[in-house]
Length: 229
Picture 1: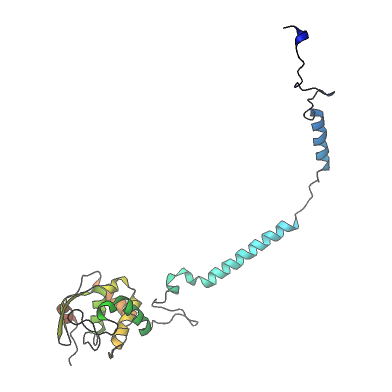
Picture 2 (picture 1 turned 90 degrees about the vertical axis):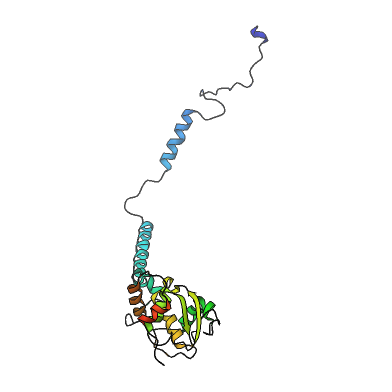
């Protein structure tokens, strides 16, 4: 094609006097701007800044306070310190011995035992024996503790009536203090008048019987006969 017929390229970048494209600064201009910025930048100062030091002291003080708080309120990281049914209770003068609580025992009885023995302690005729004024409740505390921990299965006679039910080992899933509170409540409710039960006694019997199966009422009576009328 003849050069005379070639159209001029209007899109071609035109170079300025410095040789750079018209759409951007030249290399020389970039160097000049960089030098200017370098001169305008603040020089670093010697020593320490006061603000970071204050922040460090603030965090150190907070950590010290947190350590004191945890030490004084952790109760030696023992879960039993927050357990209302724990056998020991923290007091201002030190730990105190467990005290049977019939009020707690009533709540536990209603939750675990009343479906069969009823809230009145009268049981269900022909199905579940009564606990009110029952000789099985009076007398030896060990007999009742064993029945709660291991359960009963077989024929049982209470107040002249015979029953052939199946009492589960509800005490196996309860703490010693909870079993003691239930036993204390039953032995003192509905006209019953027997001594309270201590958690240490429950722990002693639990260790002695281990994971044995349910007691037969006759076998339990051989170990702990009913009181003579």
